[in-house]
Image 1 (spheres, rainbow, N blue to C red):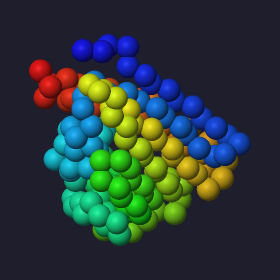
Image 2 (image 1 turned 120 degrees about the horizontal axis):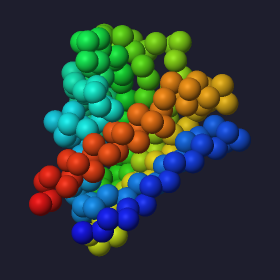
Image 3 (image 1 turned 60 degrees about the vertical axis):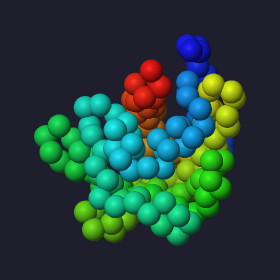
Image 4 (image 1 turned 180 degrees about the vertical axis):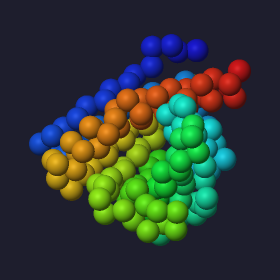
Length: 167
């Protein structure tokens, strides 16, 4: 098993993007499922000690994933990702937002346009992520909120999950 997996996290202030390239030691179908099936997303998406709790998911263009990030004290931070384009086993994009428990978007926080591309490389799969923000202030707000640290931890959780199921 490959142990020196690629991980790049680049903040591009000029383009208001975060560009992440992350290689996983698993074949494409397993990695794709981990990003598109709620029962698997719930296992890894939130950075520890938070947990993810999916309220509903309709993985199709025009559908959305409605989920909460549950804090250790039980407080739930609700989010929704509205799926825009899906090319099965290749890519998907969506517009992510913080929201209330009814799915109403909280306009006090920036929205993120996610573009995720999946590339199989034999026994590994690379996920290339471009998180786009409307302006520099939105990008900086998300970075200040700990996006890099939290997302890095979540991707580590995904590594653990994939290592367990590929043993």
